[in-house]
Every structure is written in C-alpha cells, then in structure tokens.
Length: 262
Image (cartoon, rainbow, N blue to C red; front, side):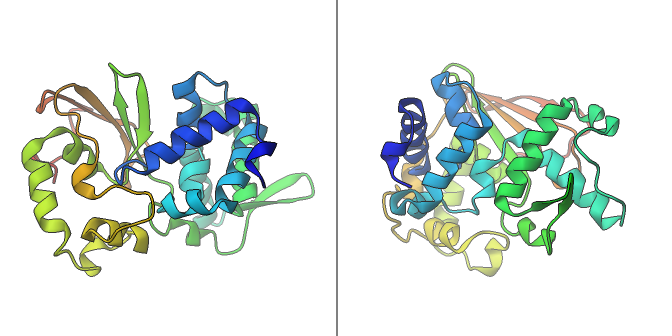
C-alpha cells in the first residue's frame, strides 16, 4: 500500500506515529495519534493506516511490538482480555449485541468495531453472523499482549502508550532514569522476559534504524504526568500522578506499587 493512497489527515497521523516511535519508551497507538491531531477516529481510516504501517519498511523497523499494540485502542484491549477469559472458561463468546457488554461502558456499535479490528488482526474470525476466537488466541499474549500503560502529559495535550509501568518512572524521575540507564546494557535476555527481540536490543544500546538511544528518550520530570494503567491482575483502571519528580496521587488507594519505579 503506497502512502499516496492515504488521505492528508491519515498521512499526518502516520508522521506523528513514526516520530513518536523513534523514542524507545513510546509505542503510541493509531487512535492516540489521531486524538493528538484532532482527527476524528474512524475505524475504516484506522485500518487503512494499519495496512500502510505493516507494509512500510521504515514503520516496520520502528514498531518493536506486534501490530495489535498499535492498531487496537486501550478500550478494545480490555474487550479482548474479557473475550479471552470467556474462551478459557469454555463459554460461548459474547456477541457485540449482547447486553453483557454494557458493563464495559461501551455501546454495541463500539464493541462491533472492536471485534472487526480484532478480526483484521487475526485474533477473531467471523463464522456466519457470529464472531469467535481464532485458533490459538493465546499467541496474542506474547510481548505486551492486551495490557496497556498510557501516559498523559496534561500541559502538552499528549497521550501515548509506553512499554511497561516502570517506563513511566524512567520518564518522570531522575534517579530511576539513571539507574535503568546503568542496568540496560548489562541486562540479559532472561531478565527481559516478555520483551520483543527489538526491545531487548534497544535496551542494550543496539542501534535500531531511525530510533534514538535509550538515554535520549523523552524526560518529563519538570511537568505533570499521569499513568493510566490496566495491569495484568485487574481490568479496573489504575492511575498514578507524578509532578516535578514527586509522587502526587495513586488511585485506587489499595494499589500496590514500589517507589522509584519498581
């Protein structure tokens, strides 16, 4: 797919994504790129951008995770996680028009768009007028799976996903940043379980085409930054607020965390 087949706005989104992905701590999704530019989110537009990205050499070099990380919205990841849990319980997959999805806070139309996106990725397939999970759906849990760690920089009006929760503290706390920089090059592959080969190489300082070294990633310790997280153990939102390198707030109060980015 040639870039000229994209609309002007779609090309602008691609440019934002490619620039973000040069930062090793940013894995910005398509919808986040659209939101930053004020471009309305359209599913068909999202898929056109997706098709271009997976076929473009420069983009593929900068994408350090599976396409699902960049194609799905964070809300759609929660839908995928629920669908996978239902499958593990050997229950019939919930269909987009079932009222049970109302608990997610999304409409049936939004759920259908999510199912269509997951079908495009190969996580789901359509059998007649029903959706079902494709063979070996747990293969989609490799790497980041369906988890997300969204960073919001309020003063800039920017949102982007990062690789893992500790990355947020690397971005917002100088001592953590320095400690991780010292550890990165000596880290073994075993110590980076769950990371893609590209991310392991990047953390060790191996030069990736177009990407900046880890030491040159963005630092936001002088401003307010928010982490919106959905960890492996809960679909309930977790929020951590940092301001000028100080921990300001954690929600819910029962959240477990380690100071200094553990």
